[in-house]
Length: 312
Image 1: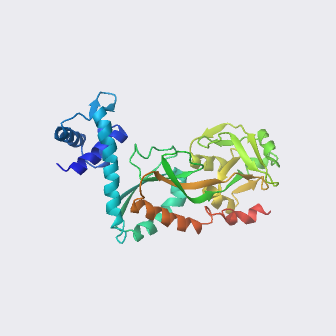
Image 2 (image 1 turned 135 degrees about the vertical axis):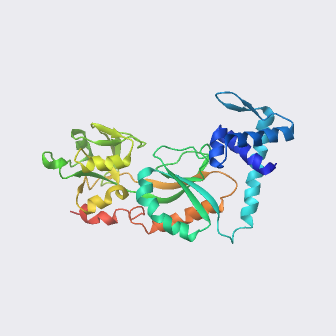
Image 3 (image 1 turned 30 degrees about the horizontal axis):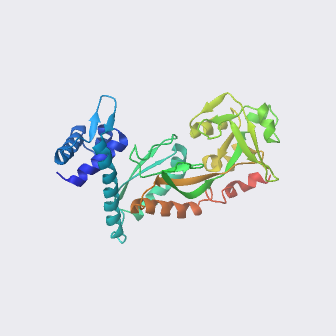
């Protein structure tokens, strides 16, 4: 029995609450993970977990052992990292990001990233929900907006600048709004996962902020669906420039309320708070920070690609 492997399995079972989830992570079977935990309990001569059909629960001895295992595994990983700086990072890096952002702003960079780090494998999941990094075994996630989770470290890698847009077809029989307050007279397409919901925030030309509660006949939890809906002429939307800048440049969509910029949102890489940053996480952060500084869609100059339409 490799005690370190068993301890790693034990920690992940506690964190995920599932033998099956850990088996999937380790590309093995649920009985194998169960045998590792049983072997650990036999070696220690204590019961670490109580099992029921609904949940797993740590015993008192299991709680103490779990804390020591976490510290020991962190120390082991830190020791390995401390003498491996000159080596290429290796293993599997598990990354999560929003669907549309991954499609338009992450996937195009992966070839260069993996060519630079040939010993790394990337396991990318894309979801618009906020994932539990610990519970789902994710090394890092890209999140757009403010990060308030004290268990995570957030590293800013870019900014999402947004615009208010509609199609020419939408304004065929309607008058273009001149102020944010005029949006209440229009059909507004709401992205359900936006933190402020149907309350849209704008910066006035004077620098002051204002918010408007909008309404419309479509609320959807997919930003790519918002892209298609606004393109079809269904209504007005507030969207990131990286999501539909190509449609603005080709004049399939028009920017409105040009003097009122929707509040920008920071782009962060987040990872679990710990004693050190694994090399594979550090190299991902460094690579995308450098690339995004040169990417006009997500850099501080994020309005530059559509500047021509903004000045008309």
